[in-house]
Image 1 (cartoon, rainbow, N blue to C red):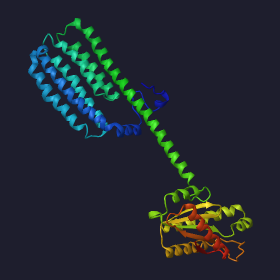
Image 2 (spheres, helix red, strand yellow; image 1 turned 135 degrees about the vertical axis):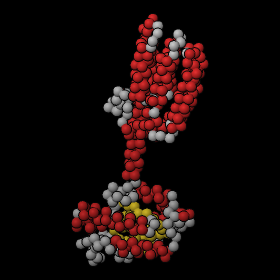
Image 3 (tube, rainbow, N blue to C red; image 1 turned 90 degrees about the horizontal axis):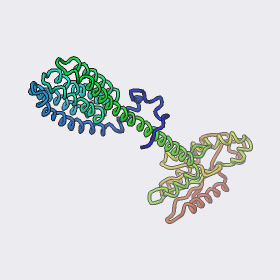
Image 4 (cartoon, rainbow, N blue to C red; image 1 turned 90 degrees about the vertical axis):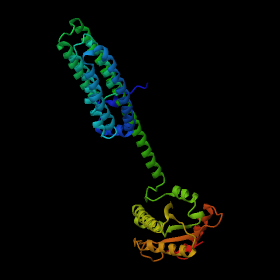
Amino acid sequence: MSRVPKSITKGRLDWLLRMPPQLEQAFERDFGKSRVLHLRQVIIVGLIVYNIYNLTSLHLMADIQPFTVAMRLLVLTPGALLIFYLVPRVPAFWREFMLLPGMLLGTLLPLYLLYSSNSPYAAYTVGELPLVLLFGNMLLVMRFRYALVMTTITCLVALWVIYNKPGFDPNLLFPMTVQIITGLFFTLYGNWHMERHRCRHYLAQYDAQTRADRAERIGDEMRDLSFIDTLTGIPNRRQIDEQLSGGIGRDGAGLLMMVDIDHFKVYNDRLGHLAGDDCLRRVASALQHFAVAHGGFAGRYGGEEFILLFPLDSAIRAEFLANGLVRAVENLKIPHPGQPTGALCVTVSVGYALTATGESAETLIARADQALYAAKRLGRNQAMAA
């Protein structure tokens, strides 16, 4: 059996073996159904065995035999069946709590019958008591706080009965006192041991699962970060490659745009790298919004270059999107004091290509890149098809 470190339970398990409410709820979520099944099975078995004592009372309490049978069949049995019915239908707190009055009925009834009987053999029915406690504490496995209450009450009542029952053999008082106290103590200790084992190991399991969930979450976050460009916040080249490896659109057909910010080096030289970084972020955001609006994907390819992917195979639609993208960036109106072309704001050049049958991603990028340089040679701030 694995040993659970004390640090697992420190501060989260009191002397009554109660866990914090959120952990009790988690335990119920994980094991509530199996607990209900266990209780219902044990209640039926216990009810059958308990009624066998109707046969022993025939010999030990013959003077009140009809009464003992009536009490077991007409009081205790319906009560046990009521609990059997309610177990899966009430909240966890009430499910566990109602075992307390049910077990008190089961332990105090034979003590009442013992006190009521005048049979010289009635004292031997005390032997039933540890067996009934064994059923409640170690088969039902009552929650320790309820087992403690039930065992304490039963012990006190049992001692009162044997010391106050008229005609009770005084020679039996001391040995029965020892038997009652030790028998009930051992069943309670067994319950404490089982309940502590349940709680401590669930806390260890809960912590292990929490750590595993946290590690998985951190792993997901790290994996997401590995696909995101840290400067612009949009997908990076690694994710672009992932997208291309899976095909752009249906049957691999699609449009690839290669986008380059015009005269970005001049922009950096004039305004500084901080302004350049801000420019990259603003352009990247515009490209991503444009891509999402048209059902596409945008990522930073490197430096001031970006790639956009769209699942379409229409040349007319491709030209419309490429020209629209050029205008979208121009409409940002980011001042560019160093534009050699005379433009007053940041612009982009776009080269685009539609996928061809059997074409690799590298070839598609190369064709779009050639179209991009053609757009630059022809004056920039425009789109060219491959």
